[in-house]
Structures are given as C-alpha cells and as structure tokens.
Amino acid sequence: MSVAPLTSDQRDSLQEITNIAMGQAGASLATLLDTFVNLSVPRINLLALSDVSNGIRNLVGNDVEVTAVRQSFQGYLLGEAIVIYQQAGCKELADMLGHTDELNQAAETELLLDVANILVGACLGGITEQLKGISKENRSDELRFSAPSVMAVNVRPETLINPEKLSWTHALLVEVNFTLENRNFVSHLVMLMPEKTIEKIRGVLDEFIASF
Image (cartoon, rainbow, N blue to C red; front, top):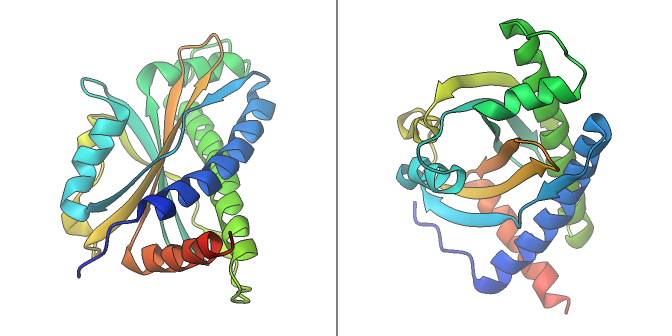
C-alpha cells in the first residue's frame, strides 16, 4: 500500500496538537514525581515499516540499552504506544518515589508500568480530544487502552520492533522525550499508528488547516 508523505502544513499542525497533549502528560508525571519535567519538541516521521527500527534507534540514541513498556490503543485512533526507559532512569524513578531499599524486579516493573500508563493515557487522550474538537464529523467512539506490559528489558532500541509481526506497511512515528530536572532520567514516548489511522489524522489535519 502506498502512503503519501505528510505535507509540511500537516506535519506542523500535528506537531502543535501533539505538543499540547505532551504538556498534559508532562504535567501528570510532574504531579506524580513532584518535580519539574522537561519535554522535547515532538518529532514526527511517516516511515515504511521496514525503517521503523532504525527510526527508533535514531530517536533514542546509539550505544544505549533500554527497557520498554507497550500499550495498545484502539477506538477513535488505533496503534501502539511504547514508553522507552534508559536503564539509569529506572533507579532514579525509584529514588524519587521514596523507595529507599533496592527494588526487586517485580516492584521495578510495577513502577515502570505505572509511569507508562500515566504518560500514554494523558498524551493519547489529549491528542484524541483535540482531533475530535477539530473534526466536523461527529464521532463518539472512545479511545480504549490495553493494560501496559513490559515488552523488553536491557535491549538495544533497534530490536524493539519486529516488522514481520505487524501487518502494516507504514507507520506514523510520533516521539517526545521526557527528562527530569536535576536527575539522570530520560524516557521516550513513541506512538506507532497504521495506514488507516494515518489517513484519518490526515483528514482532520486538513480540516484544521482549511479553517485558517
């Protein structure tokens, strides 16, 4: 299936919408951790599925090992959200939440799942509400999430996605990274969306652009 690239106006509009939603996600994380959260400018790429692994590596960085949590979403939008943690950040989270003793694997996993759930829910919820507000089409379908689950521990970022296990041909890759003030913590929220969702978003973005 051939998928047209996003125009510069479509990309800029989606970046603006995502930036607002990421701000909501960052505020939720700041409340949980009681510290200031820094957000990067969202990065948006429309990629052939075979290029997604390298795309994630380029976003997250080379020569790092990561742990990742995935959470699928469906309804108004469809896709997969992945929260990627650099290993040093896991210990920082535990310290900030008052875990003075060394965490066992189960406790660390629960912590990472909780943070991922907050980020994914706030961000995707914010994007969905904005898109619904822009669109003239009256869509009442809600966004539903699977339970978050750990998809990989201590792996290279380019190994997270196996294109052979997905039926898509292209993916909309939306990424932002979160850092914490005075802490060695970095996490990346990556959203992967298939062709059908890409075309839905493209249509809403065109409505948004035409309104000016």
